Structure formats: structure tokens, C-alpha cells
Length: 325
Image (cartoon, rainbow, N blue to C red):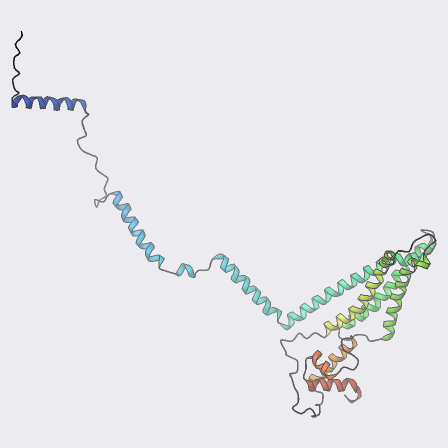
């Protein structure tokens, strides 16, 4: 049987030594901390970079808040706005220029030249189209490349040149306000066109076809296109050019007489003055071009000439009684 010796109770000195050894053991296990943390860089005033960044951000915010209340940037035109304003200004100037009498006269002259060129080209092509038909009529049964066959190609050209001579003269004089009113010239034009029409159609009519060949309407139609177009241009061109010659390029109603209705319908019509004489000349030109009848009424003259009823009556009387004018 063993006898255990009781453990003596630790004294305060023992506890202090144990704690000291424990602290030394921990110090050996954990690396030593640096003596002091590195200090943040500061400027001469003692402000760190973080403070400087925040101060800059706050100052920028104050400036932006002040500038956002200014509407000056909204008043500056952008490139798109300036482009639109320039286009609108240009359109306004062009419209204003288009109302100028000189510009209107220039535009009318340019359009007249264009229409005359188109008409003459169309007339030339129409007559050239009918050349083959006329050649077939004139050559009859002549063998190809024989003298008769060759000269048959000249029939349509010399008729066309004569017709173009008459049409060109009438068209040119119509542009100068002096249309040619001549029945012989009209008959000459009709004769040339009738000859062209007849020589184009005759070989393709039923009684002119060779034995065994069937009549076709398409053949007739194709060969009358040229003469029909030539007739239309010959009739229409002098009328169109005469209308161009009577154009009034004045500004607004300038140069036209106002409404001058008399209070009493039985008042005598006043004697023709300078304005009425101008209206009489215009009425005669319109009659020559076929836009007015030979003896137009005062109401018709008033509507066409855009004048007062008194002026229209004076023009009517001057046209009906030219010797009293």
C-alpha cells in the first residue's frame, strides 16, 4: 500500500512565474509586430491625398450645380439646326426670286425653248418613221438598189423639209406675238400631211394588198402613227407658242386694269385708252391662236383678259368695228 504525498498548493510566486513562462512561449511562437504603422503621405498643410480628392470632387460638384442652371448652351444652334435654317433660307430666297418679273420671263423662255425642241424632235422622228412607208409606196415594184428604188427614199424627206419650213416659220413668229393667220399656209400644211398619210396607208389597205396576203389592222396603225403625230404637232405648236407670247410677267396684278363696273348699266363705254389698246392687241393675238372666237362676247373677254366690264366692252366694240377704233 503506497502512501501519496499531497501536492502543495501553488503560491502566488509560482503563478506569476507560470504566467511569465507562458507569455515568453507565446512571444516565441508569434512573429513580432512592427513597432509603428507607416504614416500616410501628407502635403505641406497636413492634408492627405484622400482629403484632397474629396475636396476636388466637392468643388467640381458645386461648379456643375452652378452651371446647370445656365440655359446658354441650349440657345446655341447645333449643326443640324444650322443646316435646316440654311435650307429654309435658301428656299425662301428662291421663292422670292421666282416672283421677280425678270426671273419669270427667263423661266418662260427656257420652258418655251425646251418645248419647241421636244416638239421639233418628235416631229422629225414622226416624219422619219413615215419615210419607210412612203418609200414603199413610191418604189412600187422597182428592184432593190435600182435608181427608182433609191430615189423613192427622197420623196418623204423633201416633203418633210417643206413642211418643217412652214411649221418653223409659224412657230417662230408666234413666239414674237405675231402669229401667221393664213388659210393658204394651213392648206399647204394639210396637203403635205395628207400626202404623207395617204402614201403610208395605201399599200396596207385591203384593195392594195397582194393576192394571198391577209389584211391586218396592226399594219395600218403602225404606219399612220408618224402622220398622226406630225398633224398633232403642226396644229398644237403654234397655239402653244402663241400662249407663251401673251404671258404677263408683271408682279401680281400690275399692268391689269381693276374692276370698273358702272353703277348704271346704260352708261356709255369709255373710249379706249392705253390700257384698253393693250388689251385689244392681246385679244387679237388670242383670236389668231384660236383661244378666243372671232367675235367674243364682253363677258368672255372679261374672263380671259381679267379686266373690268367697261374695258371688255371697249375691246369687244373695237374688235367688231375695227374702223371706228
